[in-house]
Picture 1 (cartoon, rainbow, N blue to C red):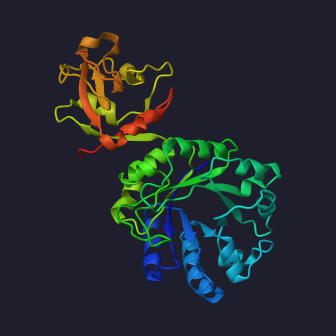
Picture 2: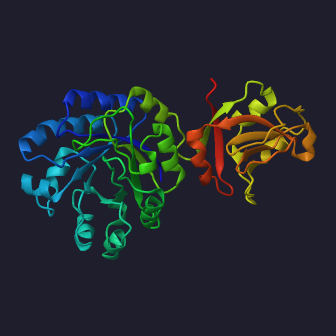
Picture 3: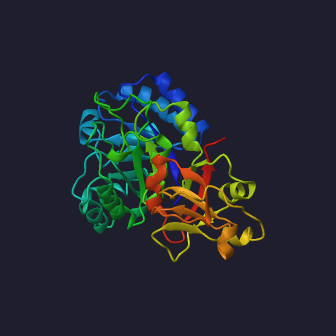
Length: 363
């Protein structure tokens, strides 16, 4: 499935001009999905004025718009689950159900005549989605989306997140999860310590959060949970590759031209016959086997996240690139750079035959 970046807006409490500006700015950076909260409204006229205006703009900017709703909203607005024309007339693409039903109800909803996506809560490791699909739901219209967690210390643990996500991805359903801006202050509630899905990501740079989400290969859409992310954050997210890990690397100042080209100008692939000590990218040694690579920075112990390249002492392994996983010494390898600390967690996602690249932070 194609992967997307998304933003969130909260029209219940927001300034419409700020929302409009945010939609336009994020669109310029390639964002194509909007999560819109509708958990507090109780007046159809207000909804039609503010929400419809924002949704119309979002659709003009080619966003997919999914709106977060609860049973209370249906009751307040006098809407039934048997007729979703109200939401279709707003122009949304789908509804995220803040609360679930009995499985049979969700399955029936997925056959709504308005062809709206029905998005389910992914953040529970129970047979919820299994039950819904057992009622022969309209599978192409069933999405999954994790919760976000405004209170510090309440986000999902990574292992639990993976278990929940696998339940949905095992059915090849479209999935989404939230990351948090370090600049955004707005959310659906008064408490807002950030709005990530994963607790361990709460204080990470935003692009690292997104890289990790995509690297799991379980999440299709990564959405900024809080508003408003800064222009710099939007820009940094726009630069990432959602389909393979691109490590940010700090290159040593005395790296030679051959090593710099090996690191930055090649598609790297981890060998299939993996080892615990290093991640090996071996195709580059064949490409650069005729080029000399004298020894430098090869006397000290290498540490996890160091990037090394075989020097002239290494025989047939000269110019092979490796990422260190377990500390070791080897004078036949030159240290050429370090993966930034915040991205060391991404090493866990480089499996046999995984593709990866490097982006220099030195420029």
